[in-house]
Length: 126
Length: 240
Image (cartoon, rainbow over all chains, first blue to last red):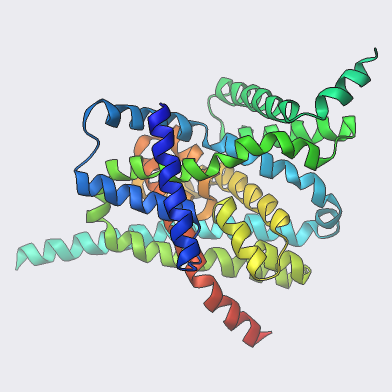
C-alpha cells in the first residue's frame, strides 16, 4: 500500500518536472499517467505481489474518484453572486454543451467503429 | 462553554473541514447506493449541497473549510496517475480501436469547447465567465491551469468543471440510451470526454470496461484540450 502510493506520487512528480522543464501545456499528473502506462507496457504488466498491491491501491483510489471533486465543488459558495447574475447562460451552456459533447463523441466513435468493420469485411470478401 | 465556542475552536483546525468532507460524502454515497445508483442522486452534487449549507449556516468562510479539504483535493493528482492501471488492462481493445478513439476524441474535445463558449456568448454571459467556462470538460487541475493562462478565474473554472461532471454523470445514461449506444467502450469514452473524473466515477459503477474507457478519455481530453487551446483562443480573438 505504502509502496504503491509512493510509486504513484513518484510518477506524478516526474510528470510535474517534465511539464515544468519543457514548458508543456499538459499538467504533470497526465504525463505521469502516460509514463506509468508506458512503463507497464515495457515491463509486460504488473508481476508479483507488488503488481497486485498496485492494482488494489489504484482501484481503491479510483472507486472514490468523485469524492476528490467535492472540495473544489464547494467553492461554488464563493461565486454565488456571479452565478446568480448569469445563471441562465451558465446553466444553458453547461447542460447544452455537455449533452452535445456526449452525443457527438459517441456518434463519431460508433460511426468510425462500424466503418472500420465494414472495411474489414469488404477486404476479406476480395 | 457554549457549543458555538467548540465550533469556533474546531473550525480553526484543518481537521474539521477534512472530517466533514469525508462524513458528508459517505452519507451522500450511502443514499446514492440505497437508491440503486440512480444517476439523479449524484453523490458529488448531494455532498456539495450539504457542505455549502453547513458552511453558510455556521458562517464559515470557504478558505477555512478548504484548509482541511485540500488533503482530499490533493489526491486528484495521484488518482489521475492511477488511471494508468485500468488503462493498461484495456490495452488490447485500445489498440484495435485506436482510430475511432482518436477521431471521436478530436470531435468531442472541439464540440465541448466551442458549444460551451457559443451558447454562453449567445445568451450574453460576461467575458470572464465565458473564458472560465471554455475548458470545463477537462479534469480540475488541467482546466484551472488553462483558465489561469488566458485570464479566467481559476476558482470559477473549478466550480464549472465540477458542475459539468455532475451534469454529465446525471445525463449520460439518458442521452446514450436515446441514441441507442450499447457498446460499453463507446458509452464510457463519451462520458469521459464530456465529464472527466466525475463521469469516470459514474462509468466505473456501471462496468469496469466503461470506467477504463472513460478514464482514458479523461486523460486524452486533458491532453487534447491543453494542446488545442492556444490555437482555438487565437482563432477566437481574431473573430471577436
